[in-house]
Image (cartoon, rainbow, N blue to C red; front, side):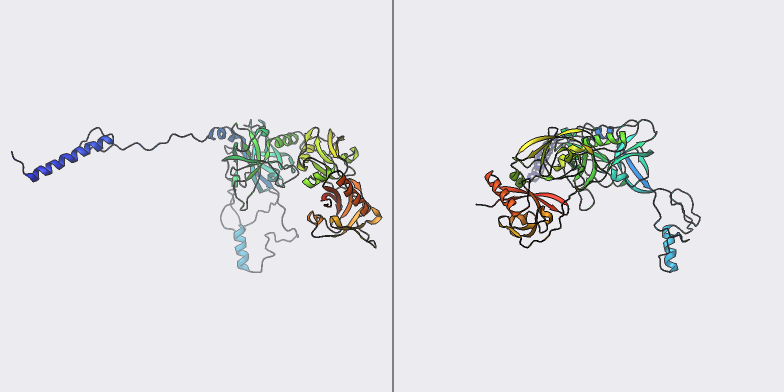
Amino acid sequence: MNIAPNSYSRTHKRLLAAVASVAVAGALGVGALTTGTSPVLADAVRVEAPQMPSFADVVERVSPAVVSVKVKAKIQPTADDGSDDQDGLDNLPNNPQLRRFFKEFRGFGDQGGQNDDGHRRFGHRDRNNDQPRPVAQGSGFFISEDGYLVTNNHVVEEGTAFTVVTNDGKELDAKLVGTDPRTDLAVLKVEGGGKFTYVDFADDSKVRVGDWVVAVGNPFGLGGTVTAGIVSARGRDIGAGPYDDFLQIDASVNRGNSGGPTFNLNGQVVGINTAIFSPSGGSVGIAFDIPASTAKQVVGDLMKNGAVQRGWLGVEIQPVTSDIAESLGLKSNNGALVSSAQDDGPGKKAGITAGDVITQVDGKDVASPKELARLIGAYSPGKSVDVTVWRDGKSQTIKVDLGKLPASDKQASNDQDQQPATPAKPDSLADLGLTVTKAEKGKGLVVTDVDPDSDAADRGIQPGDVITAVNSTEVNGAEDVTKAMADAVKSGRKAVLMQITRDDNNRFVALPVAKG
């Protein structure tokens, strides 16, 4: 049978289209093409890559040990003038509409509603001012099976009644065992309630910058909340107190996390949330933790004695700058320079004097004044320690029986009368940029003028300051200063160390000796 050219062409095109469909179907993995059969799609993209560590196992184990801490206190009435008006309306203008609005806003009127406890109001105010009111809310964690728990001092310091809320929602009353404001730690004890899941403190000396950590707490009163991050830094000093040695973490920590624990991946407490750096009040990824080693020692004392008793050396100290180290012949600026020794302190009784640089305590190096405070504070009162000092160009060891740290820091007494008597002729110490005159009773030199372009001005020396010693030698005239400078040059030193008294406080300033 003959086929017309046009018909042949159409038939040929249909055959080519069918072959192309089969080829496409094969490429997509379709086994057969049948009418009404849905096409089989390609598999979704999947990437095989290393997975981040999950914190779920850690959180599951430690969460029962973490609690929310609710603090209440008895609030005294703001006015106690004996008047009969106890609604607090005496200071409002005599405007009936305003007073009615104020009463309704405060809930004083008979509105047919209910109080928070479910009882109906009957048109009068509850005048029981002795009931504790909420004043603070934070976090905490159990450290023993019988109910001892840790939180921050600033969480509980204003409280008279304490309630802890466990991870499963139980509310339990607790009593305050003890607080330590210097480290911002407190211990509570839950009475009864059975046995509690508790956690241990880690050895934070093994914590490294970059380690993963998990913070668990009660931010903004939301209850058990978990955030994760890393240790950002160690040994942070934020000016919170004499024992600052914080871990810095970048896990999100907010208001309400105070007193809550930060865990390592083994479920041990490496630190306790105590402060955040935040211009806005919310988390910006910089939080500070009390290290576990500090907390463990303080908490142990609080559980045993209800308070912390620290050793006391009785000296005022300042940092050793590079200039001061140079003036004293020290190889480094480590240590703590004694600016004064208190008359009734154990340090002075043992022989420590102003101008000494404390470099070691019982063989442990002292890197800074903060380090010295931590080392001495770690000892109990009455403990005998060996204090190594740098004096007169050499080291010597002094045995000191530590005292008990007073409740408030004492200021060193200074028997010198610092009211200068103006003599007829001031003396010039031109090489130092100072003009001085003898102090009353001849004890020291009073600075009467300071060259604004001098090193003395740069280091903060002011008119009225009293120079009491140079390189540990008392000075009573300008010639004493000149001699001390000459001796320093002969010894190859580039600076002299001046002891300055201002407002009954001592400090040391290193001044370069004259050039040439």
